[in-house]
Length: 463
Image (cartoon, rainbow, N blue to C red; front, top):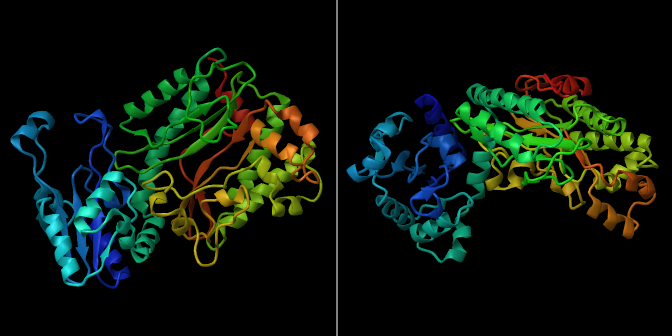
């Protein structure tokens, strides 16, 4: 938890952005895995954490903008609870730590919300992403489930996104703490991987490191010989001598700030010439993209710069042909690069995605494209100092997508399908780092993790 003044100031700024009404925050509760007493590891709602800092289940809060009132709702533990959990601070004690003077039992929340509605105040809510929150909001607001969405407030969403997008020094420190562990996780994966192992053997060692450092994965790790599957969650493959491994993972600190790093490396410890050729195209694209990061530059432009760089490299390999600018403009490169360059990072690994990607990564100046590939760009708008974002270009050979485009004769003026067919068993390459936009440029966060071909091969020398 940060000092109380951090949360006081965050709430003060939020109130300055909303003209009137009541802002309602629902914290998360525990979720059962298979019966009520056996629960998933608790994860607090990130916006609740940002403004209230309390990482315990069963809480809610509201800000009455008109009455300049802040209240946290929750219940103190009973003796029966303490038998199982041990003693915990009382709610009033928690509130002192975040600069809140008023706390009320959870049962009072409905009364307070209904009273605000009777007074004619607007109740602002954020988009609910848990089914239990939809049911709770139905009860709190006294409306049919189909009408809960009517209370989702664009003003509230935009205010939260504006604040959470710009990371403070203490937030950057937390992200770099996550990256310190992530460095160890990735380098250990490189050192441990050998042909003949199963993917889950490496993933188990990676997770052990995270847990031993009082962190945990912030999303299910991607560790696969099938790197062409962008979000491959499975770890059941046996690793072959000629395989490329895509390792995409991140951890979150005890305060829940996340990291997100991808490295691609050869199972054998040495890249083949073909693997090296594709890998270095992606690496060149990533470096050009990182070099272009500075305030005022649209991230969409940087995405397209990476796309052109990879299209140029693929043309040099004979897989693409024709005018690179035209190929990228029409979306032909998306056969190999079907996703966006990156996303915001913070308390969520895809920061604030629950509030709506179009609010986080787009604005009045930049609207989402409907072109395949470019449509998946999560972040397009102009960069500002304090933004933290991922830079993660990739080249993938997805057999099903290749077969579909080839059958439909898509972009035959830009793609040599006979050459592409030779790479059908290649897999994929992705390289990702986390970058802070500074006042005059950028800074790659965290201790460098082996990335150049020679660095990776040196890291994988069997000792």
